[in-house]
Length: 401
Ligand SMILES: *Cc1c(COP(=O)(O)O)cnc(C)c1O
View 1 (cartoon, protein in one colour):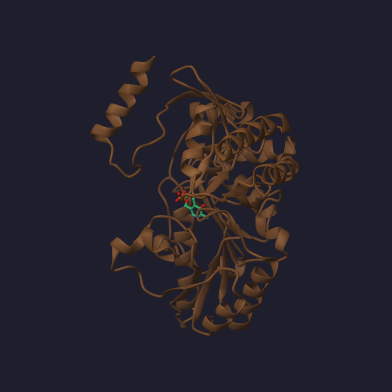
View 2 (cartoon, rainbow, N blue to C red):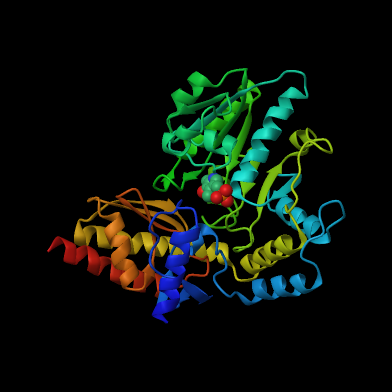
């Protein structure tokens, strides 16, 4: 058994590009619900969910059945032909949202890339091109060249110059900064409702509402990146629904097909008609397999009331973590919504704590050296959440004594 893990590490170090550094020394063979099982026979409670991807858990019956039934029939055929699942999934997303039309691709970065192209073309085709894109500092929008330029963190894009032009950054949650920079030459403002990759930092309702108002005043488009927050994670299908705004474009990816790669861009008819045949496309995007998986995920979320569960378990986490904060004095802040939670520590011990939790059978994420991130499957139970809280509190307490 030991050999299996050693071999996996050896092969990775020898043949795989070193973009992930030293990974956590474990390889999983299978999963069930919110648990993952390793080659060493160990069981882990998965509180990161493949970074907000495994929305309906591991080995979900509806999802695995939909994938295997579809795989036996037809995996891929290209969008040169009509794909019934594609239309069904597009309808499901339209019915859940402000949007009239949907485009499918394969990742969050690609969904944002599509949104950036669509916004630029929207003005170019009117004969009044607008180059200027405004995004927030500490944002994350993906790794393709335009998406990584939209990402307001130098560490992600500094080595890839020349970057696409026209991108400007403003401090998050600062309404006057936005007012100062958005004008009649602004193409779009692109924002997350919660900045997941820089510490789970939520925007205020006033901020996102002001962004909507400022965009409307200047005829600019508002793009909301819901790649991490979408598909029920925060208790509503989109996080922006809780903020009383309607964007012009929204993007989804991570949790949408429960682990099968997919991305989606949603928009209104007024903007969607910008793209003419040939303007954009994707070989794999929205293929029969990926869209069958996403349809199963949406059905599972509805049938099992998982958005409600995200709210209930998220509130439970918050309540219990506040107690841990009082008892240990080791937590500076608890942030997030539903099952996207950031725990900021008072000490720079997030990486060590992640390692210690791993040794106790709990998988979490760390952001920088101070924030622990939780983005578990939306099926997580109170009992499972409680087992994590106990282990977490015990670790924080022993550190302080
Ligand atoms: C993960 C993420 C992306 C990028 O998604 P990929 O599928 O990795 O390309 C974009 N935006 C946000 C908010 C994300 O969390």
